[in-house]
Length: 160
Image (cartoon, rainbow, N blue to C red; front, side, top):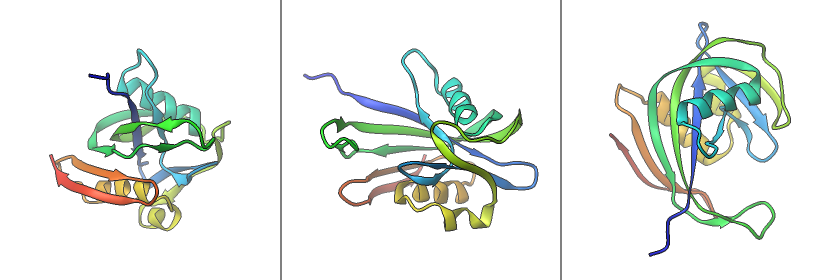
């Protein structure tokens, strides 16, 4: 049996005391909430704290798990050659605890957005689906399975 290869990532819905959500603008995906891949030897929480700080300048405290998401499609990366394997993502609720809003090498803009305006800015279907899962959060995490290429297709949506 061939050993499976998965990308593990974490995303953070960062909500401030005014109920605004932190969004960052990336080169490939447009507006998203911050997050990224877990590095070798790094745990999910540390990876998420690092990614949010790198992408936005904001320090956070991770509060609780919102959902687990699987992109089970395999597709080519932006270079057209590299296979992007299955991805498993864990989204967490976060609270800002410091730092100053700033862009980075990965982001061209970042800002606090009113919760009801977030879906007007996020265009990537998978990120929209994950944010909608946050909006439906009722104390139980969501689980979504989807593929993003060639087109977004939601294959499974449930509470866990």
